[in-house]
Amino acid sequence: MNNVVNFADGSRFAPDAWDAIDGCMERHASVVFDYAAGMSRVDLNLLIALDALLSERSVTRAALRLELSVSAMSRTLTRLRAATGDRLLLQAGRTLVLTPYAEQLSRRIPALVREAEAALGRADPRLEIATLEQRFTVRAGEGFVDLLGAALMARVRRAAPGVQLRFTPKPDWNAQPLREGNVDLEIGIVKTSAPEVRTRLLLRDRYIGVCGTGHPLLSDGDVSLERWAAYPHVAISRTGQGDDPVDAALELSELRRHVPIVVPSYTSAIQLARQSDLLAVVPHSCLGNAFLPDYAAANGVRPFELPLRVPAFNVSAIWHPRLDHDPAHRWFRAEVSALFSAAYPRMADSDLPKSRS
Image (cartoon, rainbow, N blue to C red; front, side, top):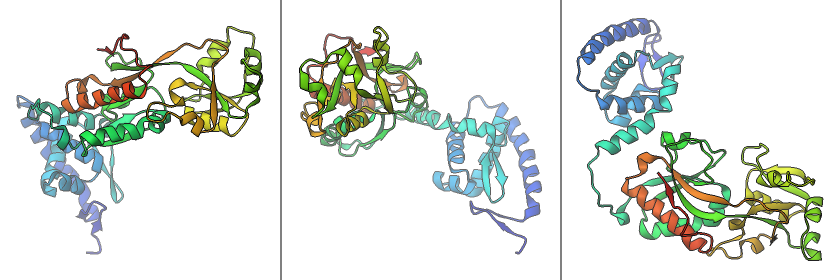
């Protein structure tokens, strides 16, 4: 027994047994591969097993997850190796690690499994909202969570108490999380180049200036461009790059503003403006809404109209087309749209085009 190695996934083998086992599995794999080549269609059960193996990185844990025996899961791994032509999982000390090809698959397979399960599930157009148990993952900026997160949760809980909302950060505008199924809905400006995404206009927003309640900028009436540019500013950039629309608008004048600090969110800019002599430029929607009418005042800032023209912009809901006809997702998107209409009734223009497909 001293020569037996106990592995992290519960397997117990003698150290010199691995070469023999691997060789045996490879010989068996070649037989299975010949058999699989004659099959008329792909066994989708292999896709589910592959998802479990790649995520668990353990034959034993994958077997428990799918309620199979360890030996059955080992045979399935052999079939997967034959089907892919790759080892997929390799022993590294006391653990199993993914091959480079398996690492690539691990980023694609979860979404494929969800799509396959949805496609092969029983079609039922009737959606019982009251008994719906589902999690919706939303990627949005901090401003949306602070200003509308509680109102959205209250709205959803009234209709579907079994639904969970999961908000994730929005570090960029990459559409890959939507494609891979890691994000169900994104809220914000459409900046992705992905041609397949669907969008729905939620509101037409514009930029406005804010400063601390006692700031001297507002002591002399109208705010001129020269006085506004003379004060230090906090800029907002989600990516850390120089992509601020205010600076783009300033290029038309000979003035430049002094920006000693850059933050990733509008809510952070509001807090810095409240606590210092910094000026900030934020979306008008960040001042408050029907659910939080005194948000700006409660956060110790005063708004003012900008002394330069900065283009308005659209805030949209963004999703992947595979969720177009899913009843639960259609319901959730409708709830988000209704929330924006209730929160910003004057900014949600019903005459603007609502969607892109």
